[in-house]
Length: 292
Image 1: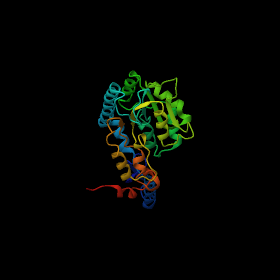
Image 2: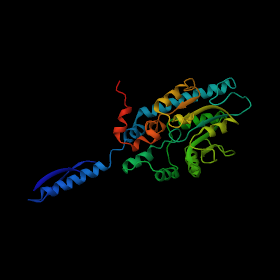
Image 3: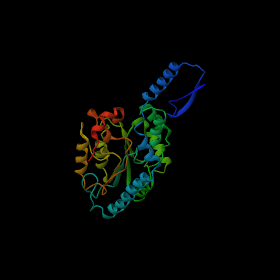
Image 4: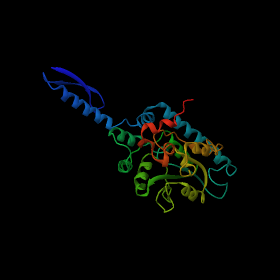
């Protein structure tokens, strides 16, 4: 008998296959070619390393805890100095009650488990799988998030959760947040979802302004630049950097950014028309690499 090693599309490992004495070499070539073609049809998921970093690295946990530790410290200082303190939005008004605005996904709730499911299933992002994940109401917290929120509530600060989750997923999101111990007021609506009002689009500006009309917003927390400012359509990566730098005095003072290497508007900005980079051939992305 003749031993032939070939690749399979089960974890791309090598396993021995045996053909009968005098078997057709041509048949073996066809089988191997078909298997290799099958492997090539499912390229490696580019989210693998970033997802592993979030799920397994000490560095991610340290980074998140650092952000929330600093935010909590600044929060106490802002409350002590109020109204003589800079606001995250608008101007100081000692009549309005205090509030903070936080994003939900990758800021309070950590959703790398959903991404991992897609990677293991050899599938990209889909709205359907995302909705299933959200409806499970079981996402774990971002490290440091719960302590920060509870500290804010203890200072009598109202927490507004501004999320681009669709409005019909609000109750599932509320359950997830409540299960983790996130303070959520029940006397007013503090979970502001996309589409809840006609003007509440993917751009969160109108929702931030809605909160700022009634509250003195002393902090913003998110994982994407659009959690803080409106990003013009067609903005490039260079445009986004300049926009962020124009607010240099607010970062780490009243605006706090969590790390999220898995997805976001940063990668959309690198492709014409704002398409996700994950759907584009590698060759189209090489031009964005810096070699100096």
